[in-house]
Image 1 (cartoon, helix red, strand yellow):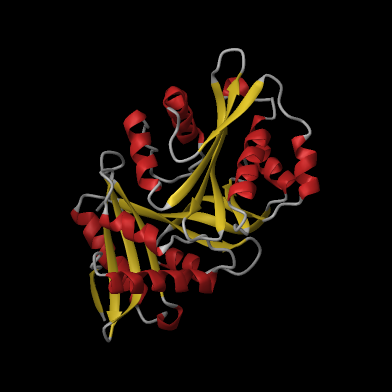
Image 2 (cartoon, one colour):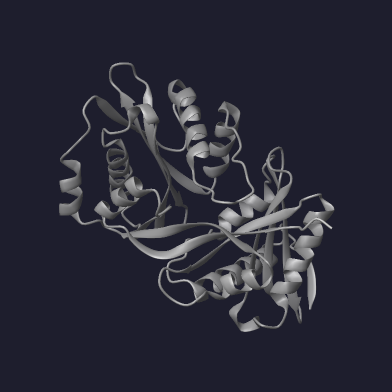
Length: 331
């Protein structure tokens, strides 16, 4: 077996790397939300200034059988790394994952990173997944967990109509696509930072970066290459201030949508804004992307208000997303 860097500009090798990652997730999970080949290619060939990627491939007889995606954050959280390891189902229990992990660990330690974290998914009720067993066996701890929820599309029209009956008073819902309107950008940046501050992280040794206008614009530009974005925001009529937003991504060439952030600012809570914002994004997906077959979101089960809102739409839990973390022990 040989561990080498992925040649990111080699189309055939990149596809082979991506296919191994796809096979590993589809074998273990019933409802994976996976990156497209175009998304992977763009992110690796056009690196963000806020991270440095080192994708690794494990080869046996010249074929890729395992992959690792090591991300070294730049500017924020430079003490830690993100790591995902995937092994083709037909090549497991042969030391491939351990070899990839050992090389990734060596590299991030060379860069002064004292730990790494990554996601594994397990059934809501069922046996321990291969990924979770692998991580725990190699010293990773459970640092945080969220439920992965799925709403089959098209959504039940009667359920949606009942939810829409109680629109919030005193607010209008404004929407946009890949670029926030200039006149709303400052409020949007404020909300994005509040979302980062409020999002539960458990024991993950990571501090969300502070967003500014330039960082939001860069993120929008990069995402627009391989995703359609749908944003709904609640604007208070009396002063035009934004009081909440909901953010959905639709990967090009995919059949699903996934809802990322949904936030209501503290001074605007109690007006059913979260419900109204989710309804607005759902309506845009239904109208403009009728080919999408499912809507995915992730919610901490301790976030009772948002969890109940998702249940009212008909979302159901399909797996637990776990953040696994390892920290080097001081000698």
